[in-house]
Length: 588
Image (cartoon, rainbow, N blue to C red; front, side):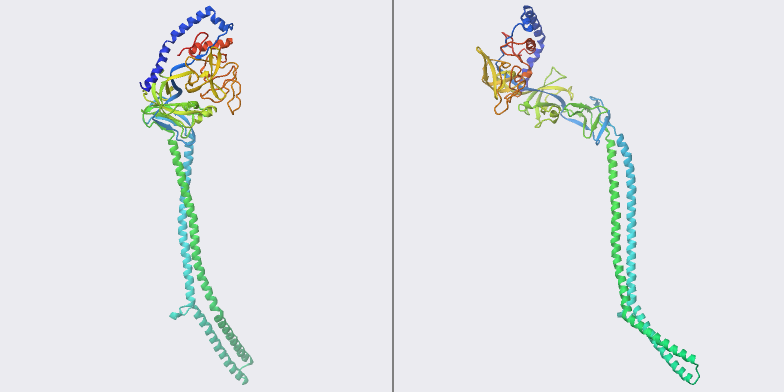
């Protein structure tokens, strides 16, 4: 028999039991009616009699260790449709969930009215940036031409200065006189002329004296000749001084002036080149900055156009449209609808492909050590309650789901993927399902109800009913499921164990740990996940959440009327949790 056949065989009796539930209820009603008429139940519910609870028998036989988890179906392979608009946007159109889409059908439309306004403003910015770039580019070109003109003018000024210097100095090697030679010759010639004039004036004065002595010249004429001689002497002295100054200073000064002019013009060329480079660099930077800004504005315009274009999401391929369920901070799944605000990269829906179904389940941390990848499962989909499907655990998360502790700080859930090995076409993503994970089948196990196990001083104990009373027994526990726990040692089949501790039982604290507080749920750690040390009459034993006989009561003692009523109700509902006086519960 395969593992799946074994799972199905163990699950099959439950269906037959459900089929005979009506018959059992009718029989119970007849028995209750007869008991009521005989006065048995009358005493129980009116509080006139006490009911002795022997407890639950220790059983022996095959025991299936399995864990039941809840989950939802998802497609193993699907196309994800996500919001690609930056920031947040609102859904203004959304296709109905379950709609069969053809390729190219409109699935989602997002509100981009604000982006449309930004697009118009960005187009204006692009136009302004283009104008600024054109201006910067033309200014750069103008500066290039201006630099060429300034450099040409500086070079011309240098050439003229060099010509002036050459003109002044001449070329002695080629025997070509310059301005200096001409000026020096003119000064020497001026001295010669002054000497000749002086010589002529002296001769005329000598003749004038002779003629005046012979009374041929008047006194005035004589004085005129004397004055002419003095003027010639002055002119000669001036010419000689000018020649001396010219020889001593004139040539040096003029030569230094012309050479300095040449050097200045050469420096002007270097300065003009550097100024041209600096101005050109400024205009080049302005042009590059304008060009960069233009490109940036164009990129932003393109991005806005793409964002506006992404406002409509079309089906990339045919298939069934399924809404995505976004987990809120409280852990619940929120579905999307028209008017919902979504964020960038948020999944809006999926289009499942033909490729199988997967159950997305959550595993409590107390069950984590039992459930490993590769375990076989039986999956019951709520939409198909009369059918079971085969599955296998493919993945168990290493870290706890953050959404679980946000919704409940005291709860840690781990995500798990369970693949369905025989899915049907009628399955739809999002369907709720229950997964019974087969951990291990114990062939010949000794087991008792979970609520019969307690912690005392860090030790696992039970209370066994004997002929002389109630005896405290230490036991070694093995694997457990939601109802039963296997006993490795300490009990034998047929022993009777209490489902609640005696009223006077006070659990000892775990060594090196503070004493437990009195009240439900108090106690230390134990071998059974969820086990707790009992304390007092209201103690809650391991597995008490499953419901058991004798809750809050005293096994072997008396019950209050309220406890009797609750106990009778649970006995009718469970049929296996315990027994009234003279009877024991049977296996379901």
